[in-house]
Image 1 (tube, rainbow, N blue to C red):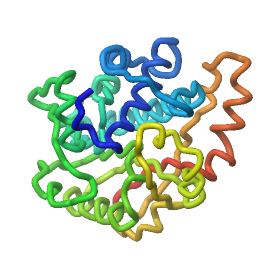
Image 2: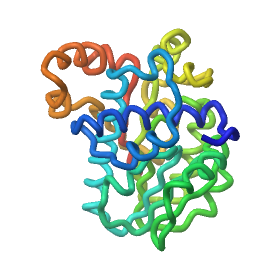
Image 3: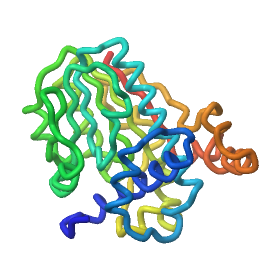
Image 4: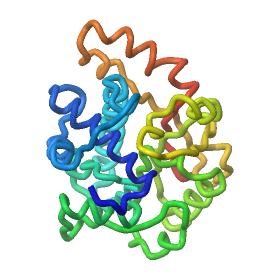
Length: 265
């Protein structure tokens, strides 16, 4: 792994580890690319970041994003997909649907690292961009329909930065769907002592109970999604299902972490 990786960027290796571990088990998520990259780039993880429970949870979250993307592209096969904070994720390969254009965006050091494993094509490209800024959004290609994916990203932005990002995207794409996960306000506070990102050097995170509180009126339709569907929990070893449901599914989990679909009015 390049020494230029920043602390927040290093967190991309936590879900990569989890997806690789789960993919090797043959459950929840088939991700041979994660297996390949982790085998070559993985480094020793400490503490909670190497938890099998976290690996299950992150893989389910990724699988839900994948399913949402497939459903969207089934309706809008010519849409633009913009994955902000893509890390080393192979979603474009996993989703394997027709799309107009797919752009994976992340900080410059991440994109530099990513290009060692992914190649651009006529419809697939990578973009070095900082989600805490919005100037780059105006240069994105136009599209009749756009799907924006922000997985594991919003907590690294302030409320103002999150609002500015959504506002700029809604201005660029009048027909917009955004998929994003958020720490709740309580979850952000709890992360001060129980957050695996600290094992790789990242620190402050932000939280909000519902993205409607950001005040982005263009994204008027907001629906909470289930990040741990029972169909996926049933794929776990029988002795682990009850523990997982208690920790990562249901009311307790949603008091800490939530996922939403937001659509333009």
